[in-house]
Structure formats: C-alpha cells, structure tokens
Image 1: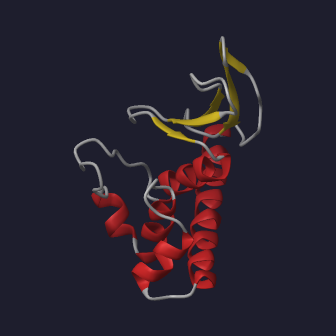
Image 2: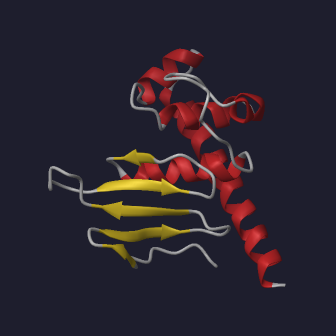
Length: 142
C-alpha cells in the first residue's frame, strides 16, 4: 500500500492518520482528556508509542524505516535501541528528537552542532525512509 493520509476509522475515537507499507501506520485518536488529538505509532510487534505532535509521530516512523525496524522494549526509560545507535549520527539525532525529554536545541547541544545541522540530519533520515518505503512498495506490487 502506498503512503497516504487516510483518516480511516479504526475504532470509536480513532482513525488512521497516515498509513505506510508493511502494516505500519499512525493512528489519530482522542486522548482521555478529550482535548486535542494524540498520534499512536503502530507497527507489527512494536510497543505502543504516542505523540502529541503528528510531525514527531511521522519522524518516528521515518526512523523506524531508516533502520529497518526496531523494538524499544528492554532499553529502559531513557535507553536507545541498538539498531539506532548502529545506524549513525543522523538517525540517532532524529530518534532523540522524538523523545519527550528533548528538543532541537538539546540535540544540537548533545552533538555540539548548530540546529541547522540537526535539521540536515533529520532531512537525510526522512529521505532515506521515503526511499526505503518506495522500494518496499515496489516489491510488494510485483
């Protein structure tokens, strides 16, 4: 299936916000408070991860595809999955941005770089993830 923003209903207060290849998707739902929306990353065998910001949920999905999937279970509260560590500086920077304890200034400080460099890291991850999804979609179509 091609990447798409779909808004297909998945339950009472849920709809598919964005659907990717390989049964990966982002689901938009109403939080218990009833205010705003939450965005849940769904992938086979992956624990539930929820974001307040849809852009962060999409970045998380990009990191997921960039490393060919990963599992956070067992990494602890502030641990990083080994697949992300092994993937390189740009992937780690993008992953850090998806964590609740960071922002672009934190990541820039961590690396000793300017925020513009972190933005370039993120752009590289997004581009690779898009290429990987396009390749997977082509294979799936054959």
